[in-house]
Amino acid sequence: MALSFKKDLEKYKEIDEDEILNKLSEEELKQLESALEEMDPENALLPAGLRQKDQTSKAATGPFDREKLLHYLEKQALECKDRDDYVPFTGEKKGKVWVPKQKPLEATKEDVTTLDPELEEALSGVTDTELSDLAAILGVHTLVTSTQSYDGTSGTDGYNNVIKGEKVKPVFDEPPNPTNVEETLQRIKNNDPTLTEVNLNNIKNVPIPTLRDFAKAMEKNTHVKKFSLAATRSNDPIAVAFADMLRENKTLRSLNLESNFITGSGVQALVEALRDNDTLSEIKIDNQRQQLGTTVEMEHGSGVHYSRD
Image (cartoon, rainbow, N blue to C red; front, side, top):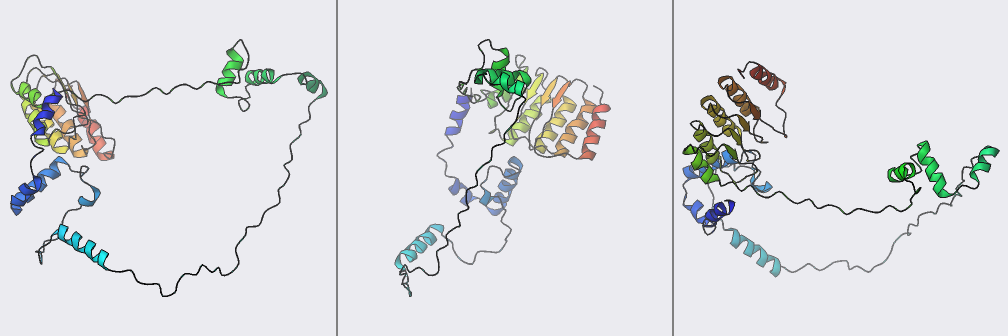
């Protein structure tokens, strides 16, 4: 299903975006800019050098051709000769060469521990394995590692000085979401009785207008009971659209809207919509990037408290 969606996108690869943008008027460019801001409010998809808006309204004083400018700069750099050194480098050393002073090595003094004669006599014939076992039993963890301590206390063969390494288990990436977005949207609009759960998690290329169509189609759907669209770049307008959906839909039981682009206003709209919905039993709203604030969180708590469910 996901492969068919990718095949539909391949027909747009041959389109010349620069040619299309050159044909747009100034008013159409402003409309396109506002639409892109709605799709990507944080400009996370743009390079860092292109995230700042053009704040100048002056008309160009002359034509500008980037390729011609680069060609001119390259030609000028090749034709310009390097200046000769007025004072040639002779390699003469002036002054004294700094040599660090060598500090005399101090003989390390070993701390000599005196034991009782009886204890010294008892430990005189003890091997290293027996000392490690004794340290593990007494809980002297500075002398042995955790693995050695376990071997000394639970093992029947005594202390083992060889610790074998284990191979690192590879962790593979999760497969992409196989849900066909267009087909699922059409099934929701047709109120397909076999469609009871919709999973759009981790599909980051779903356009914002398509997510709005999902919210609009869910208003009249009477069969879908679980809807999840975590990590789909949903923002505040999408949260407001699903809040309006909750006021109309009386079948949905679970809604998952985990997104780092939903701020306090979007969460507030969803919580307020719960007062008009008595069928939803589970809702997940998560934002890991910012705090909502004490005032907003108190309003959320009161909204959940006074909801009918």
